[in-house]
Image (cartoon, rainbow, N blue to C red; front, side, top):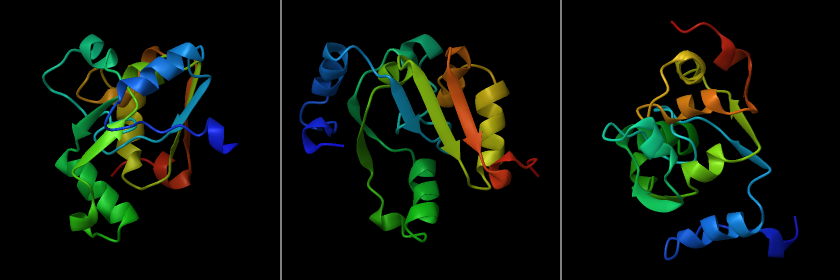
Length: 151
């Protein structure tokens, strides 16, 4: 991809990403994974919002939940939780849900329960990936580890 087409959310001006996506006509395809609490692109689970309120959130800076930091430290940092950031800038869930296609990959053993909750659980801000149940073209790709029955 040419460098001029590489765009990252800016913590100092997160709304710029949303405006750019709108100017370009939306997102054709969003790629990602599902976090242990159902987050998509660090759009962390919220108990204090309805699914509709949650789905309206744009790109922003937020604090990462302890379970997100722990799971990422185990999977990506050999358990070094102190090296995991406590805050992140994330593309908005509104932009992800608005993508024409969403493709998610899951491959870890703990994804066994995550996949089932995303696909068959209630649609709620408590488990953000569940909002994709209402998306017209969302697909979860799972390897044999993630597709196995949960314990």
